Structure formats: C-alpha cells, structure tokens
Image (cartoon, rainbow, N blue to C red; front, side, top):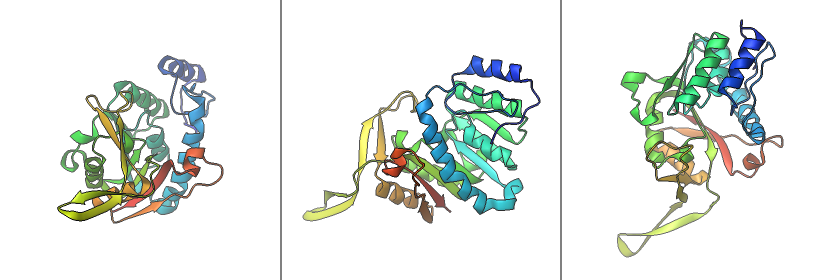
Length: 255
C-alpha cells in the first residue's frame, strides 16, 4: 500500500535521500520512492507481505478499527504502517536502533499516521503493565538473532492478546538430537537448535551468540511460551527461494 501524503514530492524525496538508503520499499502516492540499500532483499519483503497480510485481512476483515498492533524490532516501520493504513486503532513499533526509529517517524509524520507511534525500546524492557497487550504482535526477522529465544517468546506471549506473526530463519536439521539424562542408559530426544556467533548489526549490544531453532524446535518453543496453536504459512512459487526451501518460515501463533 502506497503512503498518502500532503507534502510535495520534492520535499518527501529530499528527506528520503537524506535518511537513506532504505531497507524497505516505501512508496508515496505523489511518486516519491525510497532508494533501497539491498535490491535483492525486495523479494523477501514481497514474500513476507504475500504470506502475512491476506491471512490478517481475512482474520480481522472489517474490524481493523478495533485492532491494536505491536511491531517488535520494527526496523523502519514498514509492517507497522501497513497495519496503520488499514485503519488500526493503535500501532506501536519498537526497535533498539535510533536511526531506524527516525526513519519510521518520518514516514509516520509524512503520511499523517496519528494512530502510529515508534519508540527506541528493547523487547526485554517491556511489560504488559507498562506497555499494554496487543491484538497483533509482529515478531519478524528477530527470533533467530536472540541469545534466549524461549525467554523472548514468553515475553511476546504476555504482550499478545490474539495472534503473533512470526517470521525468520530456521536451522536446517529436521531430525532429532539426543542427550543422556539421569541414568546412564536413559536418553532423551528433541528437535535441534544451532548456536552461531551474533551479528552486531542485528543483535542487542552485548549479545555474543544467537540460538537458531529448527522449524520443529521453533514450533515447540512457541507452544511452550504459552501460545495454544500455530499455523505454518505454506509458500507458493512466487516467494523467495529461502521460503520455498523452508530455510525461512512464516507462522501464526494464536493465543
């Protein structure tokens, strides 16, 4: 959905250049368009949108005006603002990097989105008592950058009233690994996770490693966090090859 604005195209284009290049493909109805940092990522953005929004639109239909949404690690706010454009009652985006929030706030102000707020916040500093509980939570492109994804999903569950939209990379191991447990002859088996070095461009300051679950492990973690059921988005042929190979997945976690 293109962003409506009352600003002149030259004004918007100048600000987009000043803040760019951009990670997300923002476009305005006056013709202004963000220059992308990585053109190859566009297919991933389009695949996410194709997998996520038809399901949300079907689920909420004509009830958008009553919906609240929290976008965790919102980056430049692209997904948040797609929900705001649908007329959601309240949209909040948080990210630990101020430069991303600055970009999101520009789009919000240029588009006149009075129903959207963007803040520099860390997920692990949030509480339902202080921040509220939201009909929709977005947890996109973040769980595989966490040292403790179980703790992350437990907190997200506490902030979610209806559904959490989860997206990200998963480990390729589809089998089970075993561990000795208690007696010498007792083994326990479960889905695998991969521990990799943290990427400082995507993780919170101080993070040393990231724990990347397999798809089965991710589903188990989400249920352990308190979500009652999950629905995996089945990719179609138009989506990015990582989704087709289930190296990257989208799923809906319902309360």
